[in-house]
Image (tube, rainbow, N blue to C red; front, side, top):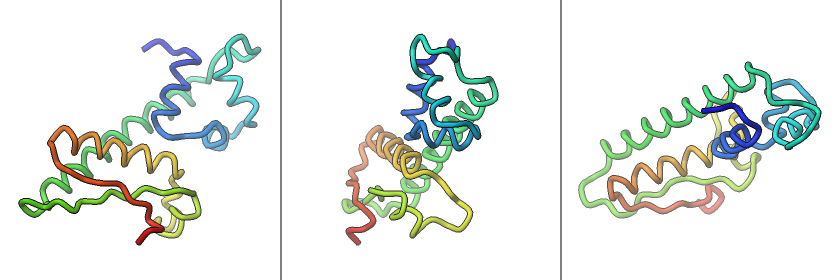
Length: 135
């Protein structure tokens, strides 16, 4: 893949991250993170270390989603039809159930859960999403 501003944005969005999430991780101002994606800005593209972080995060997200899906498939009772995947509306809602120190952005967690859903779709396992606040 060629490193372009559009590619960076596509991967960031695929991971469910906001520009603010990226800016915080890279320890830069949000304006800098925005310029990494803006065509014809005075900043060419994100630095290599930020690219590496984002690509590693995407790889980890896919690996985690595979492991979650495999665990669900392995532990699903035969004929089960009431599988639900948790989805979060806000960071505060996620923080209420996240383990201390996990500190994952809500968009990332939801993006990972969408991947789990896609993997279950591929195995033709029915599921539904629910907001944790609906419990």
